[in-house]
Amino acid sequence: MKTHALITKSRVPPSEADEELCIRFVNTVAWRLRDPVEDRMKTTTALLEWFAAAGVADASFAARLRARWENHPREGESFRESAVRLREAIYQILLSQIGGKAFDRSALKILNAATGAHVHGLGIVPSKGRLVWRSDKRDSAADDLLKPIAWSAVGLLMGTRSRKVRQCQDERGCGWLFVDESRAQNRRWCSMGDCGNRAKVLRHYHRHGGRESASSR
Ligand SMILES: [Zn+2]
Image (tube, rainbow, N blue to C red; front, top):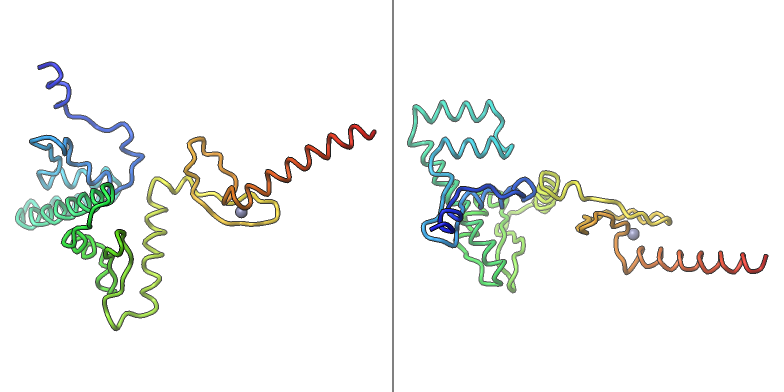
């Protein structure tokens, strides 16, 4: 009884703000592995509140939609259904990724449609157990190749990793950028095999040289 009361209690993950936007969206369903699940996007009002809190909809846009959907509830409900469909598609794709299972084609179709990528003849498709960008139109233009790069930049800038981008501190002027995923957030070089190793060797050399000059004095 006691534990049951505890685990069914509504909760907000402490690290919520530290998760990527799409993960936070997927996590609007709590207790996914129990029955029944707890869906926090059951109404258009809850949905709009979420979009506003997540920083996706600004206050005036959210207010405009709220007012519109009061008069056109079916339109609001239809949007909510689309949002839920996208959320569940993302969940399925991420689950496949986690479990190393085959990606669900219909889930990918929903995600591709939502990115608008298909307008440019682009989409993500499974290939050899992972996802790759694919052009599915014969009339795709060279400019379409820049779209995934731009989306990647927007995803990085608007995501939790934006604060972790660093530039290699190599003294020769390497200049490569990287995302510092180290726990201590103190990574200094693009790679330990390249600039990091060189810095280590140099440090060792200087230490060794320092001792030598001291003893020769
Ligand atoms: Zn470097």
